[in-house]
Length: 212
Image (cartoon, rainbow, N blue to C red; front, side, top):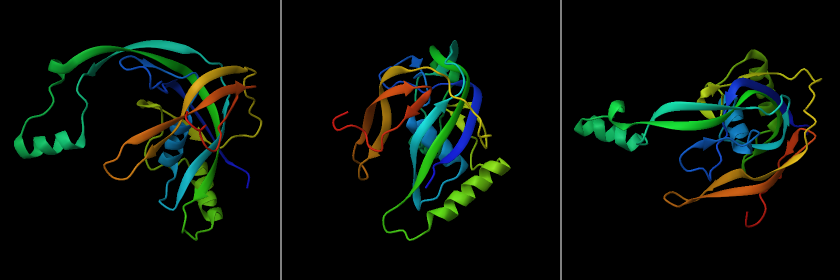
């Protein structure tokens, strides 16, 4: 089947490199996990999983430097439940830190992806494909799509069909391909692949390279 397509754009994006521990530095293009998360915010069912095939980069790659106030302590569901039982909370003034973000600006992509039906599920993928197309045409989503960080919201629409990728061809190095979640309580394993931009197109392998 031909891949499903959606065009996404926004004024800011940040697809954070995992090797950067404190400051956020974006990959030069959208990563497959970010694209998968964006598609799931538009349409998701437990019967299938999105598989990213290609990401076309339509706008020149440009960076912008941002300095923002954040808090040093990560907020989790467990902490919120503890506050509900015992009282307390987060006081931003006591945990405020300034952090630098090297983000992308004025991004524009076409995402091409397939729907992979889960093992043991007898549903016809055609019905999910039609539902996705209808939702994109109507601008419907389960949650506001975003470009790497939740505050960097994304607009989405159907591609016109005449979009042109930028002519850039360059190696991008190791890029996050996916995160494999083990059984409950087990570790999550990140998988990487050797990414490159070819004529403005990032092609995503079906499986990350062994050992990457």
